[in-house]
Image (cartoon, rainbow, N blue to C red; front, side):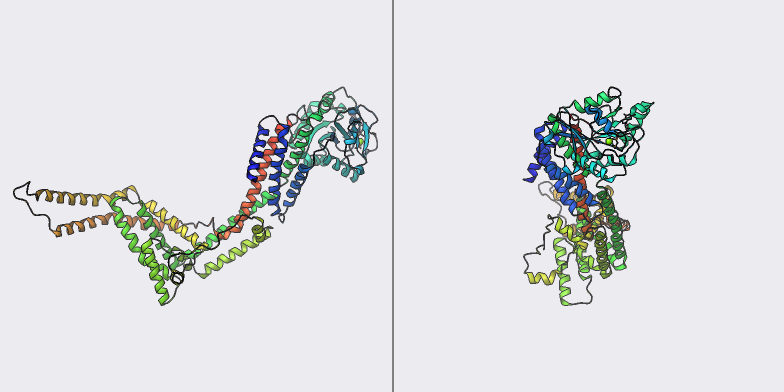
Length: 617
Ligand SMILES: Nc1nc2c(ncn2[C@@H]2O[C@H](COP(=O)(O)OP(=O)(O)OP(=O)(O)O)[C@@H](O)[C@H]2O)c(=O)[nH]1
Ligand SMILES: [Mg+2]
């Protein structure tokens, strides 16, 4: 159900990204994106103990809250944002053509201390600004746009900053106002950076009448905006003088700001605003902690892989173990060679494989047992019988051979990993409760047919993850060795001689048959005696030996070589399971974040074409 709705919503998103934005598709798209955000929030919830992730979660919550806000009729609000003394109030008055609407001072700075909102009397009742901001209403015919002059954000009066911050939260579009002298103000730039992805923007460089080289200033201003991630052009960046409303870019600014039918695009602007909050949450800067954590987990994986690998290699280097391991690999190489051999070569190889199983199975069965006992011997015999009949060696027994030191070290590694994860803020319990979809099959049913008690006594099975790992390695190495040995040449040597002998025997037998026919010759010869067949069989058997011997030599060499280069395949070791699970969860979160970020960016680009101002690229 979730999947299906998800698919239709997803369809709406791509549709919107590709063609003109259809207002009717917005709710659907929004639902889809909200679901993504909710899923991210749930996943992020597992990582809240990790430094910085709560910022990400908080930003997501903010975006979700925006998306869930009921749609209401209210005027579009644009605010003038900037440092003190850049001429916001003068510009505000000039824009609405009411010289005294917002008081201006030549000498006193941080002069404006409350919002001045220019709005038409028709839209004023729908303006929903918090009363504690003490907004001063100025009537002006701006259609469904409300323009707001704000207190400065970089003066000594902190309360000015908080009032303006609240206004930024409330508004749909921010008009950054700065002046040639103040255009590099660090705190203002930082504030813009903070809100960049969440809002739509216009950029104004006021007091341009004081500048001689306008082009140089424009270039420098553009460069700064580009550094912030915008793409400034004549549609969003204006060089003006509040004193000269007919000069410079002032007329163009008026056209851009007031030439819009805000009522028509209101829904698109709000939609873009919500997307902006989601984009903000998904920004790399906002959720860098996730990427850092990912790197840390990757480092941890590398470190523990090394340790596990080292432990294995040490255990396998023990003389007894090493020999058993080698024998097992060789046995598997023969087995693999049998699958790969053709023609007459199959015969000796098959015989060799089955014959060798008996002592091998016995050897394995006796690993880890000291002294003789009736049950053990019975077990060993059973094990041999089974191996010979089924062609399956009890490879898992080799884990016993690795000895208690090995098992202790593995336990230690497991504990250390748990602690390392906890240090990163990733305790084991959270993961198991957090991801519901990990229902392991519990106990594998043991072999049926035989009565359970008999099986119990005889089988002595205690397969575990480590054994599985080793068995996989043994198989892999055997395959590798067989691949190296089973060349074209080996196949030919193994087949050519027996073929020759066989052809010779058949020809002789054929000729004898023909000559023994009474109707063909008046004097028929006798058929070969039994000793002839015996001899023929013996010669044929001998003719198989060179091929077999050659293969045997080659396999022996290859096995030594592959074991020498052996690197235990511990990548998917069960010991690393908790780490792997965290990695999977984190990967999903990061992937979802990147995917959502891409979608939102695409959507905003598509929507933004028809809206005033610009967004982050
Ligand atoms: N030369 C020149 N001076 C200007 C221009 N606009 C504003 N000013 C002057 O800049 C000073 C500050 O103007 P305000 O409009 O009060 O500046 P503000 O940004 O509102 O300042 P705060 O209210 O303190 O935040 C005043 O002396 C204005 O006369 C302009 O376009 N050119
Ligand atoms: Mg002012």
